[in-house]
Image 1 (spheres, protein in one colour):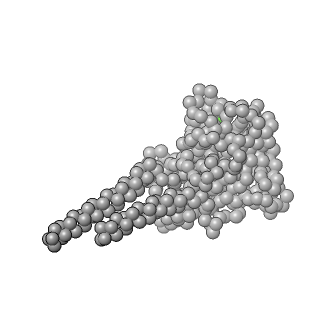
Image 2: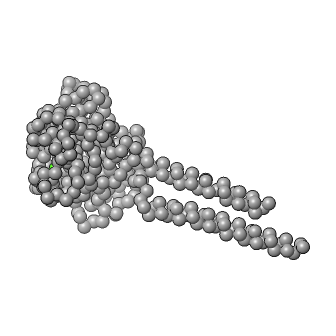
Image 3: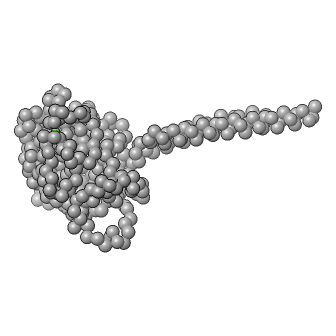
Length: 340
Ligand SMILES: [Ca+2]
């Protein structure tokens, strides 16, 4: 009966183990930032109250941008349009995370649509230009959701999401889809989805992380993750889009800014962060700043080796149960022998 009970216990433990595994996975899927840390003055949300009509509004827009009660359309699905929307309040947060809910859709078939959306964290705002409707020689960070391959030799699949940090010296090369200056990127099938698509940009302790969610499953997938990025405070957030010979509707549904609660050394705190020049030291390993003291940000989905380790632990648990069971069984047999 002891052995029987022991195996029963093991049999009960195994589902518990899997339940534990399940919760580990579920916990990795939380996509919402912590509402407490939402910065309303830097967030654009439905129904966009006062945007474009009230002088106290914290968002300005330009060009073809149309604000309705359920989306901000930067460009319609028409040729040669440019539009943008910009936060009027400079961001003085040292560590932040921006979640963008957007939708790019139109009647064009594959590769017959364009050009895409850019998300900006820059020194100048409302500065029209040739790069998705904005200035090519910008100061700061840009994230491009590029839907059209201008460079026909490109060996990558579009839409393509990429990031660039600029100190004003290097223009974004539209003809090459910005490839000369990109810090990282990924292909992402974001167009003509039935649901909205999401982007998260996180900047904390010199580390820039971009995550995408295109399947409406509340799951972030890593797109860009690099260290050694220096960005000042006091810049502005914005979004812009452009169409050319080819077009699409470029819609922003929301932009939500979260403050990340991160401690800095006194030396870092005493610096004037507004004086920092945007730069990237590519020599620095991106894996240098892994710490995440906030915990309010979704974790990345489990990577292959983590799943392997968890499964290995589960297997070890089962093996240990089996061995202990066998030993108990043997001891019991020996005792039985003694009695008979
Ligand atoms: Ca392009």
